[in-house]
Image 1: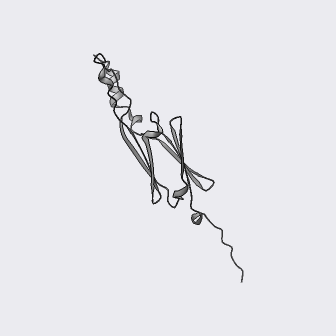
Image 2: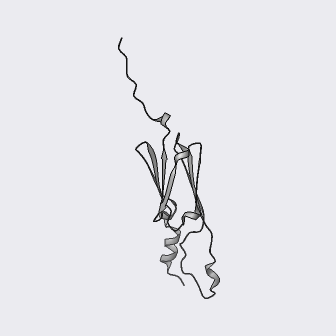
Image 3: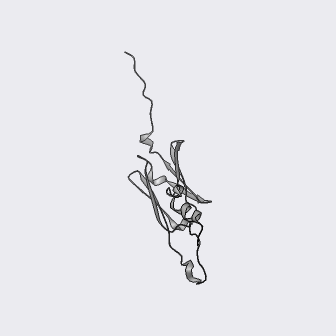
Length: 126
């Protein structure tokens, strides 16, 4: 019989509810998204952009680890399935978005369109 602590941890482990944690910040007229996607390879991650919205999806297929009949899992926490998050960034230069993936972190850089940058307007005197 499993210790009750294992069951309790699995049922009430709330920190697992938020998958694909992300930080977004603006710097040097670009939006930067830094998203943690541990356990995935870059081939399992898809990035799309449409009308100012960046969508990141990742899929990990269930690998049949039960092939060894002698395995009896006590606990399984590794995730399988589909994950998807979308972020509306507004008027961005979709042709110049760049992405890199290293050490389980996806980094997306999306430059703002030139016409959306703030311009100072001088006041004329009478």
